Length: 266
Image (cartoon, rainbow, N blue to C red; front, side, top):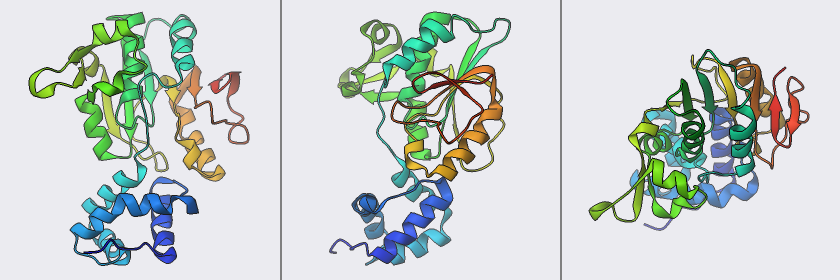
C-alpha cells in the first residue's frame, strides 16, 4: 500500500484535535511531522487516507491516546540547561525551608531524563533526607519509559561522571549498550499522566516547578492558562523554571524574575 498523503484539510483536522486535547499549536511547518508520525498507524488500521484514521480516533479512545503519544513526544536529555541544575544545587537547596519534605515537580517530564537529573542533584545534596520528585507527562508511552529508567548509553552525555558511577548501572550481556537509573533513585520519583490544559490531579504543593521546553508549543492564551493552573501548586517562596528559550513576559505577573528563565513566587 502506498503511503497516504496528508491533505491540507486533514492536517487541519489533526491540528485542531491536538490543540483541543493538549493545547499544542502545530504550525503549517509541522505537516510533515504529522505525516511521518501517523502514517504507520494509518496503514495498520487499513486506511487509504488520513480521514479514515481520523474517524477511527473519534471512536477508539485507546487509539486516540496512541496518536496523542506520537504527536506530543519531544526531544529531551539529561542535565539539559545545566545552569538550572547549578541554581538548584547551590542556591535553592541551600535556602530551603526545614522541617518538611522538599518537593519538586517536573511538569513536562517526557521520558524521564529531566526528572532523574533533578533526582541525582537532590540525592547528592540532600542524601537520605525528606524529599521527593513528581514527574508528569501527557504521553503514556513516555511515562512507561520514564518509570523504567532504562536508556541507551548514548544518553549519558551531560551526566556528571561522579553521578554516573553513583546513580547509574551499566548494562551487560543482552543489556550491553544501555544503562539504568538505580532503584534507589527510581523509588524517589513518582510519574503521573497529567494533561496541563485540563484540571490538575491532587499532586500536593511544591517548592519548585520545572516547566521547560513545553510552552514553546503553546499559544499565548494557553500559556497563561497553564501557568495560572500550576501556580497555586507552588509554595510561597518557591521557584518556577522555564527553558532559556521561553519567558513568562506577558504570560504572568505573579512571579518575580530572579535570573534568566528562573522565577520566584512572593
